Image (tube, rainbow, N blue to C red; front, side, top):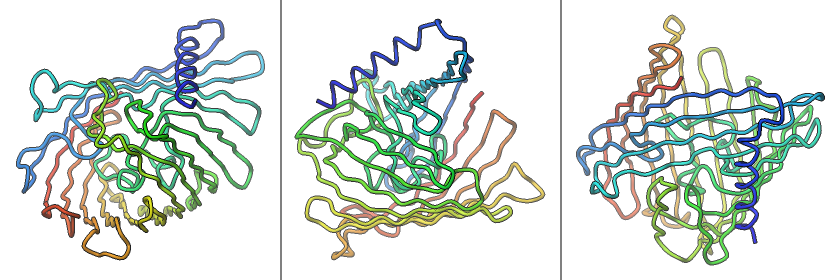
Length: 336
């Protein structure tokens, strides 16, 4: 039944999107994301993890009445190109954000559409444009999913709980797939933040990052996942430290993952940031040969308020069932 709820939510989203009955404000941003680099195994690469060369846009709207704002919508779309595919299959549409958030009262909001999975640092750290990612792609399998969430903000903490399809970028429902997740965390905005998360469901694994055409399913069988996670970040002067550790099961296999990242902004050159990340994901806690681990060095430089240049060097320490790789990437990112 959840897929019907998602489709109904999408219909409401489109209806409200074009409805001018309420006063409000809207913002429209253009986006260009160019990624390229060299891999020891694959040679030239123009896609890596969550990042692919693409052009796109983001449209944000806020609706209000006599009692204040009550509805926010966000549509963020990329038109991506993969040079490794033939000309027919090279282009794809990636719908990253496609949600509406309705304010039920001063504390609670309901959110419907394609939105963040509220687990770990995933919902509180924006990695939409960055080369360095959180643990989510290794752990959950994706960053965003189709479904609905209830978000609540209290004076001492924030909560979010979501019921989603368990398919990520594309809309699929197979083998009873679903994803229930939630996070309890300190309010955002402070120098120190922490969160406790849980996740339970049956998720599908797909290839690629496209929404249209749909990514191919690697298997019609969903993987049962159970997780609990702890996350935190701390800003001390120019140094931001992020960390997360997750435990759980994939079907009957014990899994664990953790990562730590330090981002240092050069005090005398505020536009330049240095990054260092170590990430480890244990596909089987009782077999070290099944670990995926890597250390990544990154650099980010803001040319201006709209253009950011990034570079990264990732060195695999271990890859389950694959040869270790070393990847050097450059990125040009425009948003404005």
